[in-house]
Length: 400
Image 1 (cartoon, one colour):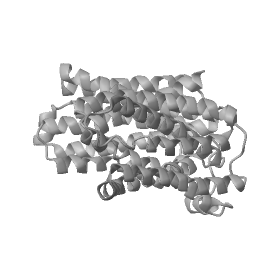
Image 2 (cartoon, rainbow, N blue to C red; image 1 turned 180 degrees about the vertical axis):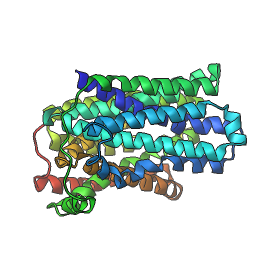
Image 3 (cartoon, rainbow, N blue to C red; image 1 turned 90 degrees about the vertical axis):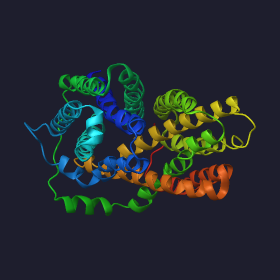
Image 4 (tube, rainbow, N blue to C red; image 1 turned 60 degrees about the horizontal axis):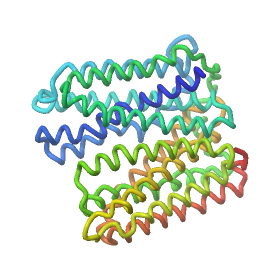
């Protein structure tokens, strides 16, 4: 039980800064009159998440104290993030915008570096301590914990901010992050056996594995269609007549809860469906979920039933597919190389999603919303080919 509580706390901790600074911060900065171009560029502070595979191998071979390879990095990074938040909370938001914007950007970049590094160590800890049959549940916990952290910080803390102000809210965020770390102190993980090969050899051995190219293609393509499609959901709903307040409730609350339920249901069902059936079935469901957005745009008034069903189905299917993909990504990790192997795969998922999202606007503007979501569903269908090939090659077992 200590294992599950500790992992839940760590995944919630990862979602807290992203929920506050990634989801709520752009709106706060706009309220202060900051230019939209600057607000857009601030998204680059999340760059460490896309690059974390570069330093992940060192977490397989370096312990910060006492042979505690995983816990030492997690504790160091989480408490470093708390310290950075205390610095951010030391000044009002008006100061950071007027006189300290470059310092704030540097602090947020370091904060993301800490949390991304914590994520590397946490994922490796999960791979080493969650059995094969429990990994579906473990990844349900991962997705649900992260989403819960985002909801707490992106929703609850933003409400608190309107009452308590910027500094008190950031202090509360720091306190929540420290609190979420506490269960790890009572969990003693399996000892990690550090790798004895160089970083170069570590990557070379990975790339020499049979079928590695097809496997990485499957990882890259599995969520690309979803990212391509969902980037245009907010513009679609705005153009369909919904207000910003409507979007807040629909996507920020209802959608997040649907995604959380999808992750839990998907992770739980993997044990009974088996990995192959879950991956195939959830990807097909994701394609149909994207098609459910057809016909929303162009109505004389928002069709709330249609919109609610589409948003709920898409978020739930996305959560289920994510839990299934993360489960087989854990299976793929080699002993003593868990941090590097999982980080590489998760970076590929992130980068593929960023590229797909970047191209989505071109698709929607050229094809219209309906044409765009048909293409997005088609990309999900295309991802069935590499998935089917890795299954045929025996790289994904049928067992749950």
